[in-house]
Length: 599
Image 1 (spheres, one colour):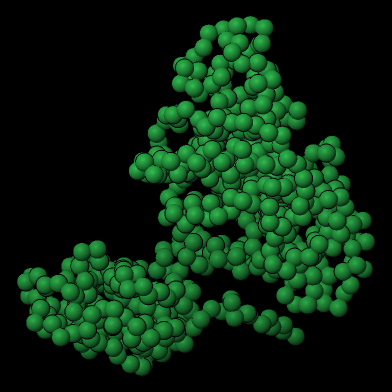
Image 2 (image 1 turned 60 degrees about the vertical axis):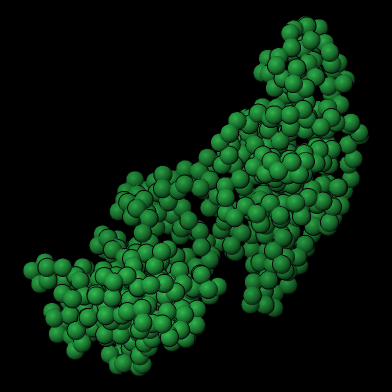
């Protein structure tokens, strides 16, 4: 007896005969949307070989049409004088093309102009798929058939009913016939779906196509996938909420990263590691990348290379940038993603506190000579005996209090100086200092949030799974030690004993974090998602007060004003130029507030 397997819609793809295409062509005043404008739009809507409708209009470009363009297209300035502007035309065109796949000959040109016009007029460009008939022709035709893939060359080759003449609607009609002629070439290649057509135009390597079978045994559902080489060494580790769909995309979608193409060529098998939910998948991915350091992963391969800002433990402590946290070796702030971020935070601290910046170890019993920073008021010159250990300790205590609970004495003088620079119209200097302060505040906030979670002996969390059940996580000292599910109509309380019985027991001292900073941050993000419930808590889950809550508005303003600019991109010296605000340290306040409450 034969056994038949039902193929999923995902695997079949979208049949080309069922896809609605809108073939569009533009005429413009020049070659770039930055200094040129659209003069005509023509479009034809087709599905299954049948024309469903046409769209055509002249457009007033708001500028004179160059004579050579008029000679080429036949469109003159007088012809478009009474035509609508592009802002009035676009809504009608977008409605005409709604839900369709856009097609154009040399698509980057036409779609580039349309996208720029939408952006200029405050309209949202639709997230539509697109097909470039010029690229498709290069894949399907040979030099023996056509000398080039220009529309004027392809039209007679495919005997189009309309000849292209540099008018938008006529060229769009010709492109429709070219598209259908190219579709006839797809049959022998076995390409029948939109997804396969997209893959063809995106130059998927034939070697990648031949390895599609590596995804055959990958299940659906959340988890981690590992591409392995002939020696079974991990090449690449990834995660997805749907393993099968994600792994198949490496062979059938438009994945174009060159390093991934190279990785696929080396891969011999794909290992799938199903997980209970997305948090377990993200944590397992993080651990596998840190353990195996796959050559094709770029993110989180070397957590040990993270940088920390350390206040040393000595009579006259100083700030230094280090790679490892050693308990009892001082106060540590971080981690920072790179040296520029760590240096920016250190520069902000030195702007407010006259901590010494020399690297030698000082003794209160040995008197030396002062450096230039002492003369500038940047240091109290403890090396000369001008500052006692106790006096210096009161300055260092401000940094310790800021990291532990209360950053107000450290941050307030910096914000005053930012305002002072802005009032003096030194806007660039104010922006540089503002961004450094933002780096410092973010680092303090991150450390306080993570330490609050890492101090909890055990935490049981539950999140709705969207189907009436719950996703469960057991966290100990910031480390995910167990994950499971309580399906619909199953008691969470009844599921917990078995989950806790199989939970991992973290190693190391009980008063130290049991996980990497990145893992603890993943757990914290999961906690803060809407709908997460605290099922059990052993110990106290709290954030320090007053914390960094008072600076949320400041950080929001900085983020809004960055305009996607790198906050660490300032290449000037990190040395400050003026005397820092003098600090009158007070006792550091310590306290507790429920996690998530305003501080």
